[in-house]
Image 1: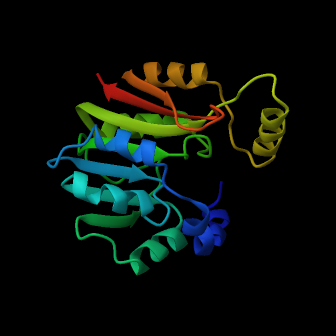
Image 2: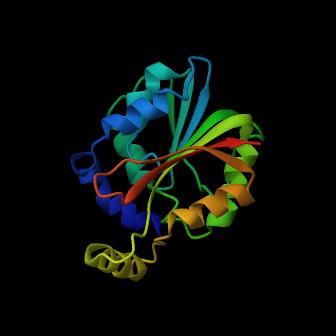
Length: 194
């Protein structure tokens, strides 16, 4: 997916995206005031701002220059740095972060294996990889239509089993798996780096 697509969404991004209170509280349970957190796919930094008092430092990254520009206009908390990053080729040193956060981005990246390699590389041993992913639910018309649309947009729509396999492949022990949507179409996964 090209950055230009997301650049076009930047002006209305915050209006169309609200933070799920259950998700926010669950993430906070895995943070400490000493943690350095990397958020990949931050958009305009909305989640980073909501988490800013729960950790020491947040590197909020996105590959859309317009999303980052919008985030900078918001004058986020002083412990947040916004940066343009290619999630498949991060510029950070190995084992730089205690937590990596990826909210609704794993299904849109072109090379998910390379992204997981990078997440594993920049995460400290024992650190947490927290992601939210849409999942395929069988036998429902809504999900059939969603699947069709996502394929048109070149997004992936996997089952929860597919994501479990991916986490295991890259040495993340799943310690939390929870539905965060009423219809079960969005799942929070938290993996601990082995």
